[in-house]
Length: 313
Length: 270
Ligand SMILES: Nc1ncnc2c1ncn2[C@@H]1O[C@H](COP(=O)(O)OP(=O)(O)O)[C@@H](O)[C@H]1O
Ligand SMILES: [Mg+2]
Image: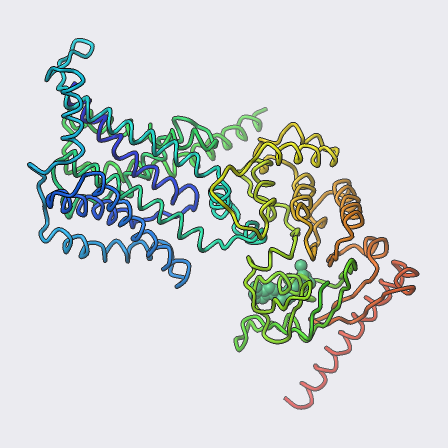
């Protein structure tokens, strides 16, 4: 049960990453690999600030801002310097590796005693529940774990609702149109390039936030923690789409969250059943590959079958 | 009002693919004027519209709209003055977004976009009324994705979107060419109503000589990046499809003459 609770919490934390990827991948149709660097950036900056005793809320805000700066740089490389989107992401991700090491000063920062949001959650749950362990449907779980889960759930809900609301404002609809049909929205007076930069900034801000939360939950930030995260986020978004099967905006955002949680739970189970942790990345990559090509294959196969059947005498 | 002075545009200059798409075009459309542009494939009609809309900068010459020199303005800035409908019905609308959202975008054409709800109740009410006026039954489908509509419906909506805020200049680029005859007829009728009703300054490219004869107060015929013929005033009123066909034939003969002369020269000198 504790394992499931952990998977659920991490899944929710990474759903912020998934929402970020939703913006770059679904609104702008860019696979933005910057996130591999910006999730670490968020974690690293947050960890360093927390160790120095900075208020956790401030540290998180700083992480978000740092992420938006990273996204802005990727966006400027694409929009102003006309560098291919994939390459822009690779450049910024690579540069961020050095930046992150500089921020941390070494490759790993533990958060053993530093005050952070999980210590807050711990304190609140103690005050609220009054006991260390709680009985949930017959399982004993630590009140602390429940508190953290509630906190993360609160943050994710808030971000999800805010993102949904933003995408329905004048600025947000223009941003979606900039991804959907640049020619049209340019003719309606929108500077598509600026909106693309704004979208990537927002996306990477959310990703950095995800990293900041992850570092606090795991109790450390690590220079390697971002590797493969873009694929992870893509997998979450794709699973979410098959869950909700809808193009409606609200359901798509909900899907990204649910997809992230479901994917994490599946991974936790697979690990439990003996999947070698070293194989996790290749399994994720194969999964995304399958999710990208299967729909076309199935479509072709169906069509061929229908043709074959109508051709029968 | 639109004033174009001697604009030039060469694509892929200095390469084997060099195309001199505009070779000195000048055109003046007074306030409320309606110019129809005819011409063969590749004669530069779309390039002329794109130059005015700002899809690229011209190599030479100047463009004035409503008294402002927009020659060096980027496209999104000119959008404040220009409403546009493209040939491809897919070009003018954002397919995954709803009818209402597409119009919400159009209601802010060339204006500042803010952090506030894109679709307000008043916009929705006004939208329903105006869309009802199209008599296409779309007023009950404002929340459907616009990509699910037919080409004719999308062109009609795009036209309504382009003119929601009265533009100083309306650009129509063969906006009925991709439609079936019945939808084309419908969209042309709507075009006449809107342009006439609002007194819009309009430049319409068309492939249909019938449309050129019926609509507008001036017809220009383009050929090889230049304006070859222009009919206005009483001459335009008297214009028949046969007259236009005659001019086309003339251009074609002249071109063949050009080509045979070139061949002759090549044979003698190269
Ligand atoms: N963006 C472009 N790049 C290169 N060549 C172009 C471009 N746009 C138009 N052309 C060329 O310019 C010429 C005029 O094209 P266009 O204005 O589209 O003709 P039409 O009169 O059929 O609308 C054509 O030869 C076309 O191939
Ligand atoms: Mg054309």
